[in-house]
Image 1 (cartoon, helix red, strand yellow):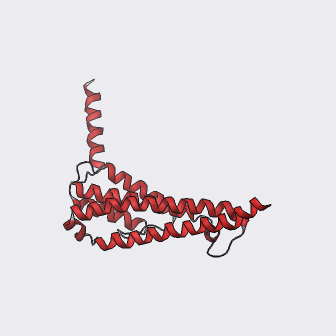
Image 2: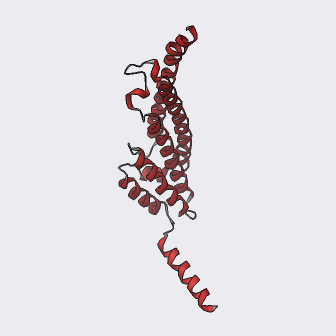
Length: 189
């Protein structure tokens, strides 16, 4: 019986040694940079390939699980990164059909479903992006010194806001064009 307790304790020690807990903002940032490098991203850009984005999200979620005693500044920045990555994943999904996902390069009403679905996903991505920017704004406002240490400023919030606005605007234009030309034609027939 005592041997079982000793073995269980040894296993717990081994597991504790394998999962490094994050204690400082700098340690967390260092871990995040390793994850970013693995997937070709950085604090201001995301992976351009769906597989990398999904795997990166998994790694960031795992990092989040190891960060329960990290400072609030790191938790907030990590929350922003995860939310921003989720917006990116939705946007990548919206573009899975390439040029057929938009009316910009021309379209036929046969692609109505693809464009409408892409438009809906791009709009949803923009909304998730705006949500992530709320978290980033809170991080920059409350933890300005930490934000500056990783080169994140209000300017990044403004540029990202413009990006999400453009994403949302283009998605809305595609939806209006499709509704005007394709759905109107179907009703007239």
